Length: 360
Image (cartoon, rainbow, N blue to C red; front, side):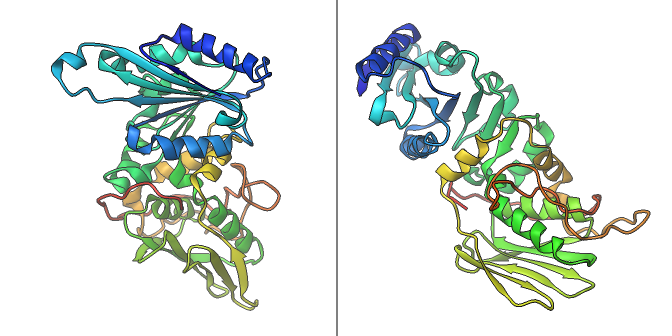
């Protein structure tokens, strides 16, 4: 069921939601969170479709905030709010409200969104594109327990990572980090199978892909070894090569779907490592709403330290692997977020122009 409201208010939107629930025979509110999507008209359809698919796992009220550009100075001084309310089959397993803001109300989107939040339920804000460099201090981001950005859609994705590290607040996360969950799980599992010391690592992937830098920073932070970032033609991440005193360990994915895990002294194994859709990434991020300390540690390690020689530490770090934290994508539903070892130094990666959003 769809209800269109032109030049409306938050109060009228709430009444339309109640009316819609009664009309489809579900007067009770059975949603677990509010997902606020801040986007533009161009990306609204794809973002809403991803959120609708994710709502099958996390029933939620989805508020899509679209800030329309006013064409003339006169339009910029006039405020207007149009809304499209969707309930029932048109909204997946939750409720959807598409909010189009015109004029000065564009600068006060939080005042429109606040009355529409589910009471006593967590709030997640997601910016598919044009995310603020400091999400926690954004007026809409300040309403949320979890703030999801996507550095891959930025004009300068690698430089954006540095800005994210400087402004990181517990609750921030990025879909470029979520995309490497299966890689981190697989690498941790591979290191759990051997008792070797890792001496160096190479991460290979397409240019201007922040997921490659994040994976490299995570490995450098956890293993305390030099990590080299090299380029390939893609798609996305293509390989991770770890040199150990027992021989190389290689996880290679040339086609974006099926990877090969090679460990010295063991037969090669085929591993399903497909590039996931945005809906799967959002669903993973909604599974846990507490701060992701592993992401924070990897982010703060710093792109500019990649490739630096490891600093000497009391006993040298061993490289077996530790296991898990963050949640999802391994076979048992947990995500490996720890590779045992220690962390300290390494720099210099490349800064880059941009790319538009895509699944990893």
